[in-house]
Amino acid sequence: MSENKPTRRDVIDAELQKTKAELAIAKHREAKLRNQIKGMTEKERRHRNIVWGSHFEYLLREKLNVSKEQLATLDDDRVKD
Image (tube, rainbow, N blue to C red):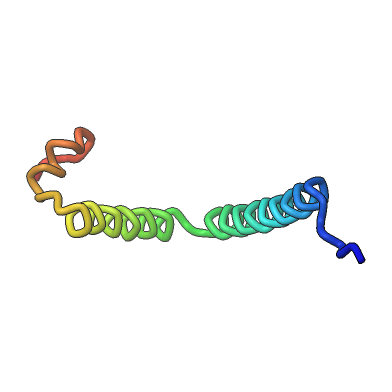
């Protein structure tokens, strides 16, 4: 008795369908975020950018063990106080 083993083509097709579904979900999420941002006022947009900028700075400093001085030398666009 032969078992119904998936052929290589079936495996590839299944993976392709899974990838297409993931892409559709990612595009939907991106569109949802873009619409959220469009609905924000300029003040809300600036606040969001500041919060995320601070979060990424924290990740760089704490997780990658980069000092504040090293980060300042890497960031040419930063306005020095």
